[in-house]
Amino acid sequence: MKRLVSIFGALLLASNFSATSFAESSKQFSDVPQTKHFAEAVYDLAERNIIGGYPDGTFKPGNSITRGQAAAIIAKMTSLDTSNVKNSGFKDVSPANGYYKAIGAMVDKGIISGYGDGRFGPNDPIKRGQMASILVKAFNLPREEIYNHPFKDVGSSPSHDANILAIYALGITSGTTPNTFSPNAPITRGQAAKMLKATEEAKPPMVTLKASELNWDHVWIWQSDVENGFFKAHKVVGKEGYTEDEIQLVPLKEGTGILNLTGVPSEGSNVKNYKKYYVHIKKVNGELTLTLEETDEMVPTAVNLYDIKESIQTISLTTMDGELLSSNMPFNVDQYSIVSLTIDKPGQYIATVKLESGKEIRYGIEAKLNDAHFYYDIDVIREIPFAVYEDTPTYKGGYKLREKDAAEIAEITRDPGTNTFRVKATGKKAGGIHIDYETRLTDKSCDDTDCYSSAWKGLFVDVKQIGSIVNVYIRRDIEPDH
Image (cartoon, rainbow, N blue to C red):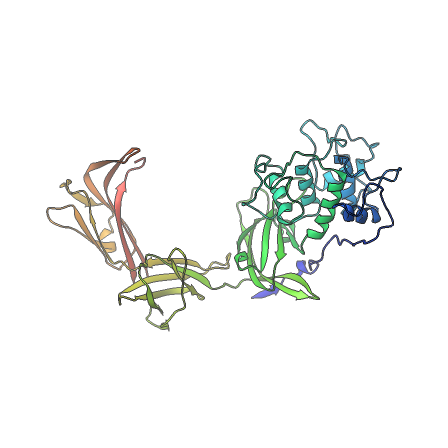
């Protein structure tokens, strides 16, 4: 069943801050010639009355911009309501301060914060790392996670690192050198103008889904198919008392993907809820638009078949009752030689892999419904009904089977005069069997760097079963801490 989610009706993609290009501005500053790299940004923002110059007709692009000035400019750019603001509580920002309203509005939205000593520092030069964090939060930029970046000095500032990389990913700014960002360096007025205009232009179309819109306190991305390239999904962690958790969805190309969210209805709750959506991306009037469609459907799910060492001729698929579903199933082989095929219905199956050598390997597959997820829960076992384990030959003592139902799980024999065990699954039931020795055994081995010891008190037999397919595995029953 599918249904369109009404809460997304208002979430058609549109840029919140469209920038206008000004080839010729009515405002000119004597120290900002058109040849400067920040000139276009300065004149654009000046024309929109977002920034201004000095009475002497200069802009002073090389002067530092302060934290208070940055707050006032960004509050104006993002149309924050500064008419009825709460006192921010900073001891150096009184109601008489010219930036009082802008700072208060931005604090209320969780965009900025002060120092640990209770100050905001409105007259302190704003630093590059601080500016990155303010831009990301004020413009609600996508929280792109980047792990491969050139900056040697990004990684020591947990409060700004992620935001620095977010604006870097969008191309809003680069480093001060090819391999440094200089997060503690101050920003000049010219640089700030260029960064602000670049932020407006770089913000992609995006849908934001808040936890409260799902009647949850917190929300996480549980599953998605972002690897198919239709959209990106980012989790934004809320700040208690200011902002809430949200999911950002950025469309990349036309198509349909999937998104599975999980959340909790209240703080501290052990209850987890799930929602599944188809993510539809289409072009409307040349713009990519993204809509979500809630569903309870499952999607075809990959099944991995391991331990195939030879080239494959064909893979056939039958039900456990012997009904042939396909004599030549499509399959993929990845770079790690893992073979995969796709199951699109729940049930138990037998996959028969015919190798180039003529040998056949059978796998038992079970696909189980999971209403919380898009993909089936998959169990796979390779058919190995019989196994042999040759333990250390020095042990000649007796043994016993610990489990009372061991005979229903497997037939276990020991070759006379040896410590070789043979295990054959009965096919009646799955389970584990402990083969307990009369005495504890130990072993020690050394390599070039260290020596290792182990101790075990017998063997453990693990019998798995899916339908008529069984798998027997034997190992030493190693004691803990060895």
